[in-house]
Length: 92
Image 1: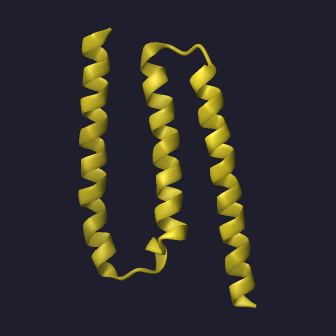
Image 2: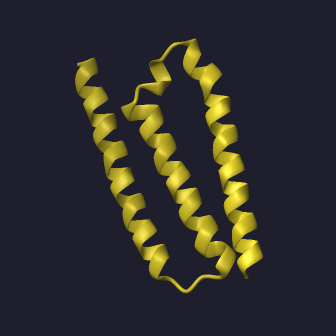
């Protein structure tokens, strides 16, 4: 019974990822400001990545090493995001 509930949650998350992909495609065609053209797809991508990490890569049931490595990954994503925004700010 527990395994069936696990499959159900994975299917729900998968459907959410599909909806977020459609949202990304819709946002790309919308006439947004320069900052929003970068910020909104990045936020959607980070949300999708966190769903994949948490559910499909078993991050929620992993050992303590995952929670040690997580801040390093988040810091890297933050640095890359800041560099992208500085590049967009420099160009416009």
